[in-house]
Image 1 (tube, rainbow, N blue to C red):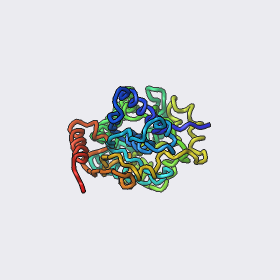
Image 2 (image 1 turned 90 degrees about the horizontal axis):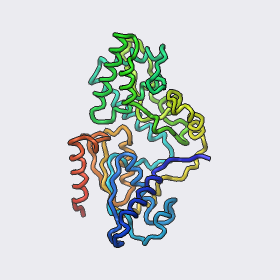
Image 3 (image 1 turned 90 degrees about the vertical axis):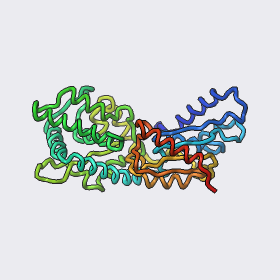
Length: 336
């Protein structure tokens, strides 16, 4: 038996909380508005799929209610989930964006091309143990690129690369404080499972030669690319907490499809709950093109597109206020 972690669990929790908070309210005031960032946006879309019709897997949440909608409005920040049946098209879109962020990184810090090659060569020839007990392999090191889609994170990765290269220059090994800093920037330990993808990221990456280059030849101009928010088989082999889950992850990744749909597309098309969304042109985690397609499939959805914010804008001082102003403007603006 396989268990899939989905937005449904969050929807159930939210609906339970709403019922408690509004228990003493008259029916016309039992609605609330919800805001979802990233995966929270995926949960919001599942929420819309679940109400108020009873044909969805979460219909029990609304079975004893009147047909009145439980949600007054939905705000989504970088979380318009791709309405696709399998992950390959998502990864194809995201590998292009991750490549662009790699190019931005090396354009800003060209000297890191050689530093990264030096680090990779060390990892190819030496066993490096992390403070947590895991192993710092080349694939795990490349997953530092997961940070490239955040405000200021390119600089943070550069600082770490400079520190790691300096360790090798002075000590010929990575010091414990440096490895601890690495672990603070990169960890998949708390998000362990892939599912029914047949290791999609690993397969799709083979279509992008730039990500296959691991040459540490200092005379070669091609940089070694970092990867992004992608799960590979090796992810489960370098962490002591994930290693026991490797057989389970492999089983899930290779199991036949058959998971129930996360979203009711017919219900979303008929949606009347106002949805206001921020779509980030340079989003490295949620495909821009697929996000726009989703926005056009959801009824009553209005959105704005920006290339002035990254995925975590809602948690960045200054950007958060700008983001919310744009969402409020969408809500308050009248269009015939």
